[in-house]
Each structure stands twice: as structure tokens, then as C-alpha cells.
Amino acid sequence: MAIREGDRVVVISGKDVGRESRVARVLPRQGRVIVEGVNTAKRHQKARGRELQAGIVDKDMPIDISNVMLVCGDCGPVRTGVGRSDTGRKFRRCVKCDGEV
Image (cartoon, rainbow, N blue to C red; front, side, top):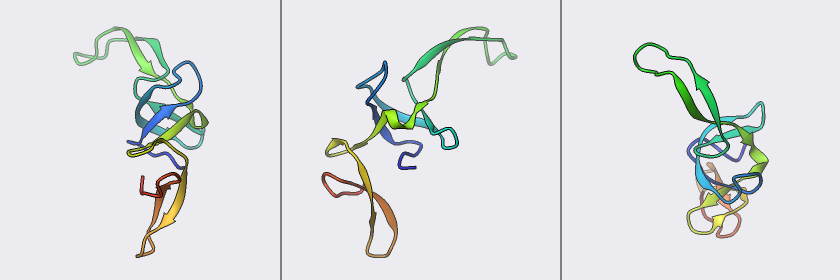
């Protein structure tokens, strides 16, 4: 998968189109990602001891990985390719500026 935890992404489809945030979790078997502050749903939560109070909480739900696009620091939303360094190490490269993402 081209998108990993901690990457900056922008949503390109759905109700949160145009929002930019960080990937909190990647679910490769389902082909989905959880992006912070995107696709939130209200969930009822039961009290669990002293640390978790009961109530209605906002929970980030997964969205399909095809609905997000990686953000390059210089170019903005870009497609990525695979490049090789002089030592033979693979890295994700930006197609627009040809730099490492």
C-alpha cells in the first residue's frame, strides 16, 4: 500500500471532500484507512472504571483507501511512484517534483 500511518492525506471523494489530515491507522485487509477528524460518527460509550466516562463520543470511522490522496510537502496532493536511492533502498517518490515523500 502506498499510504502508511502518519502520512498527510487529503480526502478526494465523499462527504468530507477537501479535508486534509493525518492517517491514524491503515487496515490493509479491508483496503481502508482511518483518518483523524474525517468520517466521524457518534457512538454511545459505556463507562469503564474511572478513566472512561459514559456518554456519546465522536469516533473516526474507516474510509476506502481509494478516496484519499497522499500530500507532498512541496506539490500538494500527488500520485506516487517507487524510486531507488544510490544505495538501492526503495522509497516513495512524488510524480510531480520527483522528490521523496
